[in-house]
Image 1 (cartoon, rainbow, N blue to C red):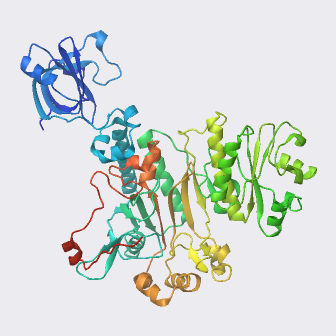
Image 2 (image 1 turned 120 degrees about the vertical axis):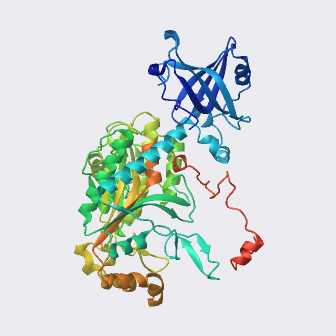
Image 3 (image 1 turned 90 degrees about the horizontal axis):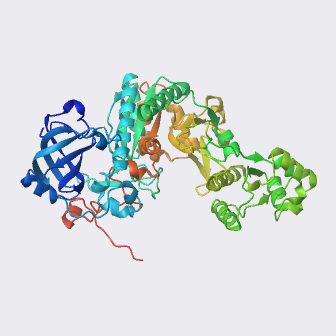
Length: 598
């Protein structure tokens, strides 16, 4: 290689050695005719000195621009004690230049590469020049964190005798899932592949094939509306195992995440992770991926308020719904604007409004609320006891069907926590990692629009052993053997024990999901057939690598841990993808493009 060392390797032991370094010019400083250049590569920084005694290279150094690529050969010199930089691994030395080669002179930068300044630049501009954005220290750190996390995962699974096996990216269309990216087949005119949303069916076939332990760092594709934590193409740690029960999967994943956090952050994660059933998670936190770093749990008041004079509540309860509340302790100073913003959030989730009580003093007579006049003294005292109400608290209510009431109040809980954080009344540590398992999800959800049940996870998820008899008669209350691993309010992975018996899988397709036989045969016929040839009991899980890397790097968006992400419109602003196809390409693919009328 052209260089003898990286820009982080040199120290006092290298004094008087002749060395060659290559990298980018971080900065050029003129100290009375002596030029100092900070030279940077991926590993670190070294100070280069250009003396006027060497006029030819001194003149070249004077013309250098930041981010130019140069090669320097020189002699390692010890710095004067007063000039030692203790914050730099190479801070005790500098390289006195003797030769310099300019490999590439940089043009004027479109934005500054210092982290503090670049963070203020419009993200679209940074994505347009992503190759520059990635030079920033923060982005280098993000890429390093992601790489370490991936290596940790691979090492752990290899040590546990898993085989890394690639599966096809081009699959067939299964329209019942998320929207797919279709790929036309030139060799099969009129037919299409679909980019794989996940390797789900392939990895189950690998279990039938006797691979027993499979994993893959899998690229997955979904043509969905995008958010900060969603991309059209993403990466998951995909795992499947034979001859297991749920406990085996819990232990495996806990060990993997424990190792990952230790390898990347040097943080010790305690195991086993706590577990919550889906029903408990919804009842206590209003969401199936709860952030348990703070309290503010939901309280059911249905029994206490079933005969209340506030008809909005009593009618919901009599109609089979529930009334739940949270105590946002210390948020009694909430402004009308903040109340309105919370109410808008509640309405976006189906609420007709947001009932609340502002607590002033210890006497219930001092409480402020438009609904307070409808409550009896006994009802107010019940609220005070159940919600541990004190002066300065804010009580927030939701009244609806159970799941909707939980969801509304779960979101309001998070909004309240953010307001308390801004006031300095609640601390939620970014370095606190509350892992947990959420288990016993519903197997099926009823789709009102379709008038039938749909799979809550996917149609290959096994029913809970105790609930198989309910499959046809009490489908709503049939639990699944699905499980999610959750961290600080984010679902970082999900999976299940799979159905491996052909009769049970066929029963789910026909009786529960009410799929026509021709649809079953066209989409899943090969699976049913495969299960008849000695399919083992098996289960799996997929963890979002992008999301894991973002949490490890404390990033606001997964775009920060993806080298070349798409925008929320699904565009790559650097390469300007997607782009049009030529007429010849379209003819070869037997495709015609028509412009839709407005």
